Length: 175
Ligand SMILES: CC(C)(COP(=O)(O)OP(=O)(O)OC[C@H]1O[C@@H](n2cnc3c(N)ncnc32)[C@H](O)[C@@H]1OP(=O)(O)O)[C@@H](O)C(=O)NCCC(=O)NCCS
Image (cartoon, rainbow, N blue to C red; front, side, top):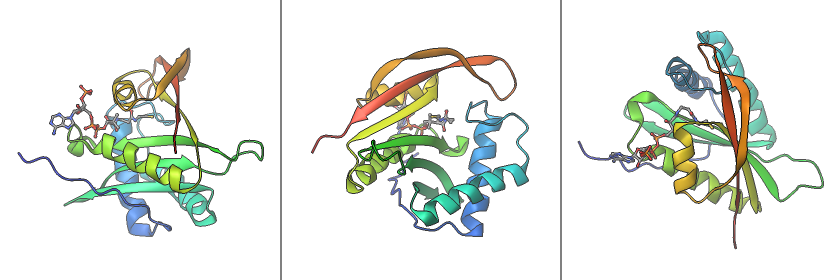
């Protein structure tokens, strides 16, 4: 099978169709056991409500969202929280890196991370921070040169129950 060439883009507004497809991605990740703020089963109306709030943040400029699609629609996304306290204007939080299971292990996670870093630079950010449920995603952040700060044990519940730790990372964006 040929590896797709991903082209993540940054929509400046999310319409209903995009919100629906992003809800599918979120539900799929939770079904797959990812600890991304929600418990299993994640009802569609709750997933849609989450993306509607994100869409408001995108519209107001508080957030940037990056999305990528395959032939079936949106299958990957990541966010930057750009709006930070006035003493941290150079910083953004990176959050909700989500790749639908149908599109995994084809380089999309990496493409989204690189696109998010490029977007952060364009927005004048020089420091990114993220936390991730300790596990698979850590390999990606390590590979991309993020610095691991440490692990907070028992930070959150897994979607099916049971505590998991979270690993905090940062990345400085050079000129
Ligand atoms: C973590 C996550 C985003 C990774 O997405 P992904 O698209 O699979 O990421 P990539 O394809 O870039 O890399 C994943 C692996 O596939 C491998 N890979 C990439 N392209 C490949 C290819 N063409 N053929 C085979 N393997 C490939 C990478 O080397 C990497 O291997 P590793 O895990 O052994 O290091 C995805 O698993 C996910 O959405 N998980 C659930 C949500 C989550 O945990 N998000 C993070 C919360 S902050």
